[in-house]
Length: 129
Image (tube, rainbow, N blue to C red; front, top):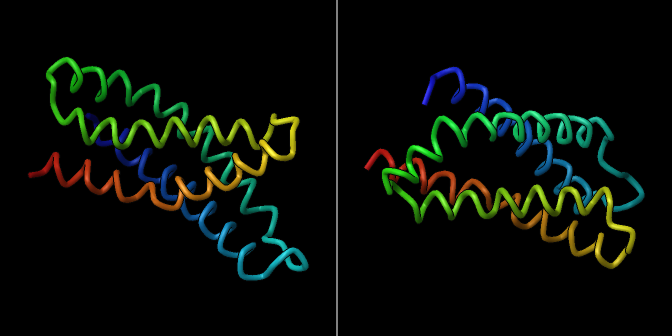
């Protein structure tokens, strides 16, 4: 996988993770009377779009060749599945017409997003091992 793709993924993923985590922690700690700055959600959304574009390149350059070679399938799936859940729940946050469904999307998006570094680190370490 090319170095430029890795750098772009690292930047987009870092911006996405930090903006989402800071937004969630801010809202939990400050409460509804002092909501997190809207700029955090803007950065989160923009970096999410970048990540989805980069995911297309990642599929071609990394995932399909590794799948064909049967390399690191377990750790790859352990990373790909939560990413797919984040995309689906992110869409749910925007387009769910039902407030109960939107609440489920919010909590699951936040929980999965906050723990995403774990399968990512495992996948990277497994590759290096």
